[in-house]
Image (tube, rainbow, N blue to C red; front, side, top):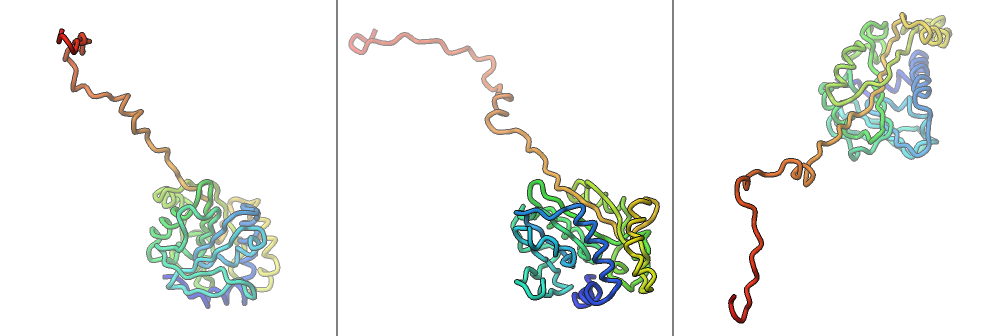
Length: 254
């Protein structure tokens, strides 16, 4: 079940731990996808805390928030870019999005297959999608004090299998949030250090998985006239070939 938008807003914007989580994930996102002009960037679930770096460069930024979660205006003090939608019905044209971020939208959905189908539909040629989900073996999924402690946690293998099942090709994977989800001043102040350590120690389990995927597009099989010529009908085989007939003279009939 989707979390409430008020609870998500309060965590990310009004708690020290939420700001640490926001900064840790957003830094990895920007490293992966530096802001580029002319792109359409969208987020589904509650991904807007990660999208601010793209507001100045992107052609457009769109925040999609599921109905059971609720919607809030964002960014504050500027023209709103958020809209309410259903898991399986996003108000975007097919192939409209260049970069899509899904956070708190897959693991909390009652119909994750519909979310994946819509994500596949709206991604355009050459587009990419980044799924951010709780890590099954991470500390952040083991308590309900943060949004990552709700819904279904995933392992890397489970996410890759699910993405392939819905027409995606996993490209890159990483983890983030290596400090424990604690409000202790020590862990909050040293969060940047633990993120630095985690990137260099693959045996450490981050609190969230970040899986980048591309859209599989299969080349259509050749058909039409070319295929018909390569597979001609054999219905007239065995009949004599037509021979030229002498032209009759209209006056004599000969």
